[in-house]
Length: 459
Image 1 (cartoon, helix red, strand yellow):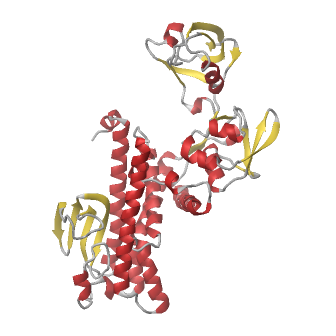
Image 2 (cartoon, helix red, strand yellow):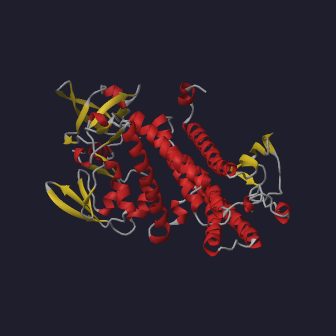
Image 3 (cartoon, rainbow, N blue to C red):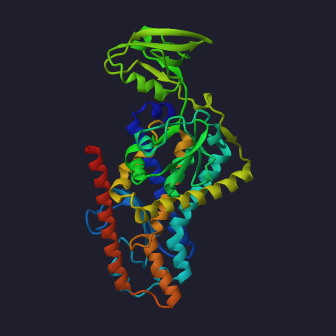
């Protein structure tokens, strides 16, 4: 598929395609991690599947594949049930629940015949590969694209706030200085630092004075459920990027490059000021004072009842601010890729921990299923953003699989650590029952979180 064809698709289609490609690739690579270490330790792998060839988690129901091919001891295939994937390793209690095989004496090529440390590597193989994939992608991105960000000190016009930020006590034009006394250097890290560090006070500069704004109870919850990224943004002047045809803006004579500085004689050089005044003028005469080619002029017209003049403001933030650009050489990119992966993993752990430690983070409001996953991808394809998000999803998959839940890699690791500490293998019957319970819990979680997504769509 050509890139120009992808760009012409609808936003939803582009999101779905990106999600499908990213997850399919990461699932295959995750399972390859198990496959690699299994083969490294001469363990037979009977199946290697993208998606499940049964109705997960019921291994005996609706067993069929969309594609399969046998090569050596391994059957490679694509299942019909589009949720995850798996490798069936001989002599192991897993989602296939092959009890007949487990009832036979252990064979040299089976998982259960291998040394504990070998089994540990086999189980951690998928997680290891997911982390390595994230590192490699980040190295490539930083090597090719470098890094660009807006320093907080360069946001010279201060911030623009939404209703949540305004209710908290922040104001349009405030300049962020620090959170709990700690300086935040990157503008795009202000909100995440406030949430993940559970900040209590935001220090701002307002009209030349320093002001402490307390983070009130309920603010974080509102940011996560209502603000959707609009809590604060960099405040910018209004420069016209484009004027739509057959609109009030075109009739008034508004042109590309015009800077709006006042509405009906009231100073309004920033979008929040312009929007506040405009809201009161539906269906009424409106006069815009603009600067065009260094000349000030007034454009008159009538604001439609829907309050839409019909122009698009300039969205290129580089026009207003000086961004910090960092270029990485090959060795620097390697170091940055490793450290960035560690930072992202740590941030996700902290984010996950908030579900259990913060009274403001509610599971039914902050968690979701496949639709929520899809929403993190942009509606327009951008290779750099796609790669960065794919790497982040790989980190999420690594972390989720590390959770000590039977049926996930982390659950098997717990049993293995028990064996390595005590010198006695876990009872296979207990493992079978724990795996069954774990798989049922995973199915229940899948239904619950995807149900939340569907509920939000209708809501």
